[in-house]
Image 1 (cartoon, one colour):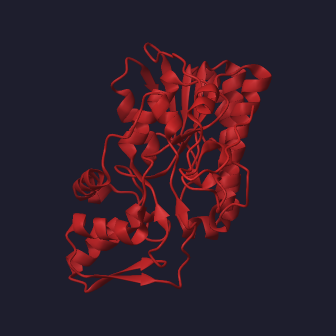
Image 2 (cartoon, rainbow, N blue to C red):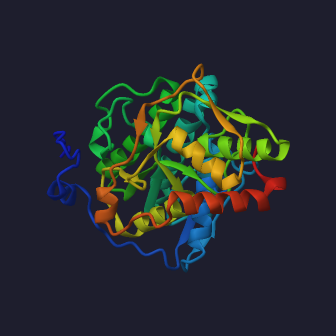
Length: 339
């Protein structure tokens, strides 16, 4: 069944239909060998920290030992390690500039990683796998908030379509192995994330990291203003990565179904508002200058999260509190941050 939503004034999907489409389950991680693929990334490292609260054996493998874009390397390691559960958080990620500049890298690396890991998971009989996608899978002009059934209903945002297509393929891979081979492979679609382990590269980072670093450096330099890409009008949803990790563990334990599940807060702010919050968090007292010559990207992106809430989970960390924790971590880890 494909859940089709008629847009109404409240712009919310029917609760009864969601209950039929999103299924509760029970899967215990206790005593299991749990592999976090992509454990050095922001989301993967947060999942590793969250799993410390579970009675499981967490498996990790460094990229210099196993290249997940290589099928033989991936299959040989997985056959030897024998994970029983997998969080597939590995992949190439980046902001608008990176996506637009390296389209071949983004589509190839992500397609190769997800295909290799998901197929090998099937071959060795992994009990459960959770694939992490991204909110960019939805059409550029999708109704807001974005409900899961909006997938493949319109054109994608051109600046990140390569990454989006790869992530859509990952969802479909999980669905295909579930249908043909009865594998318990599920997908979660996180919104825009920020927090410990973020990438602060001056060109290839996402909005939260780019702004945090820019305001921090401007504060130290005593600069009069900070430039922010775009008009400031687009609206975005931002989620603290520790919350996202907790949601992923919750879904691993309590969800089994073919449909992907949105992971977000369900609320958004304009980029101008977000920049103001970051400026206040850092303590920068100068002016914000918006550079309208730079791309805005999708006009609005906010998740509809009724499905996740119906499974018993909601984000506990406010944006203001999350940004404070984010900046504290940044200050404590400046020497070791990814950039």
